[in-house]
Image (cartoon, rainbow, N blue to C red; front, side, top):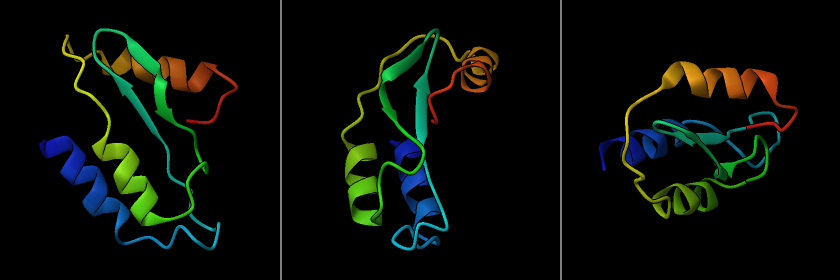
Length: 79
């Protein structure tokens, strides 16, 4: 889908191998889906990152961005 392609394309400009740049993904709809999240700095190659993003499933629901940001800002886990 569009969102997966966007994330993959944006990540292509960064060198994840050096460790200087870290990426993470937190998926959400009506609820936050932390079980499918990619932790910040957990992946160190673009190919692995794109593969993981491509395998994520669409969960449906509403788009509650505020809820996702609150979870991201209040949890100790690095998304």
